[in-house]
Image 1 (cartoon, rainbow, N blue to C red):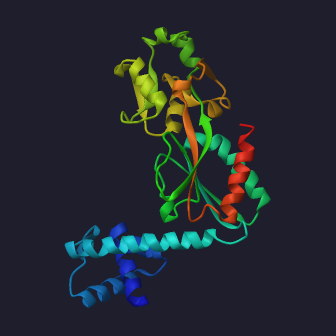
Image 2: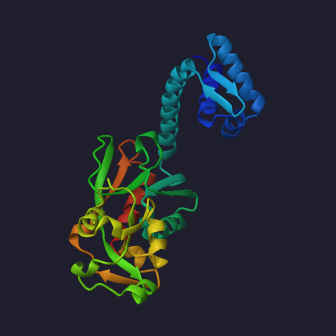
Length: 292
């Protein structure tokens, strides 16, 4: 396959992803006329229509979906290769991409800032959220994950710390509803929690066993929203001790319990684990975590 053909296939892939010529052009950094020319050339070369044109944009035909499935795999592999190449070398420079749950940002953000001070040529990308980024495709260099030990054979997994959580309520909530002093007194109180009843988070499983479903009156998929709901007097909720200790106006209802905790893991891809940049950050992070 020639370079020009791959350029056309890659263009078609981005049109399929974005659904419009303008969206693909922006992603690729080219003029929209170039996108149209690539699509027309590729369709003429293959003798089939890859897209149906309509008022809202482009949608893939059956032939287009077949081709673009291969294009996506190829594009993913190329991005993986680029990420690995960037991660190699003896200098701590370029990008360092770290991912974790948002609840860990209280500690990790400061650590990343201090690490960057040691290596001013480094660009930090800190990606938080519930989505599990694929290290095998170069989406992150280092992941801090919670729960069961990750089992991808292509990853290097190291035990890190234990994340402690506790039940908190706002001073405003307690002023109106009182403060339970034991588990038995939780009846009649309202709670804020995760919206995913399939979650394996140990504190969430404990909560759904201890309170009635109708007591969980506010549910969210993001821990930051849960935090904000607790701060706004909605109800009692689980928060990271690291985060809650920095927030005024919160009252710890019960101390952390072993059955609420989740282990944290440091995860890196085997191809990047030994690079200077990743090893430097892992060593720095472990040293800083001793004071957490």
